[in-house]
Structure formats: structure tokens, C-alpha cells
Length: 63
Image 1 (cartoon, rainbow, N blue to C red):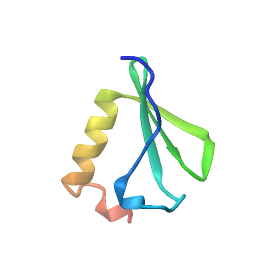
Image 2 (cartoon, rainbow, N blue to C red):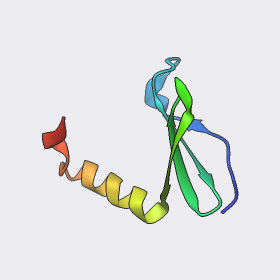
Image 3 (tube, helix red, strand yellow):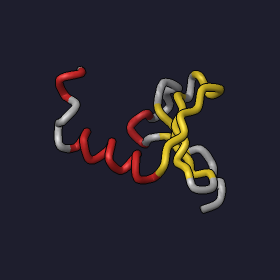
Image 4 (tube, helix red, strand yellow):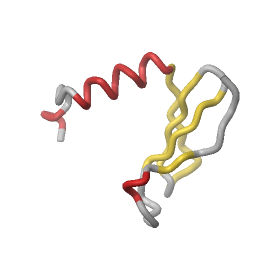
């Protein structure tokens, strides 16, 4: 997996307060568009598990 460009959610439209994602080597990188210097790096397995938990509502009690 090679590095790619940052992608912004289509739900954010023209706003700058959104999460951006890209791949870099074997990792998925996440950042907030308004604070681009802080980057969360995780394996694809970890990101997939997080997205599955969100979709299943397992983290709703944290909202």
C-alpha cells in the first residue's frame, strides 16, 4: 500500500471541521482538517474494527 492523498468526507461539504483519511504504507491515517498536524495512525484491521463497532452502535453510550 503506497501513500495517497488526504480525502475528506462528502458530508463535510465546504466546511473545514471534518475528519480526513489516507493510506500510507501499511497504515490508515486520520486527522481533523482544522488541526492537520495531529495524525492518528492505525492498522487497517484496527480501523475496520472501529468502523464495525460504530455501525453496530457499540459506542453509542459514549456520545
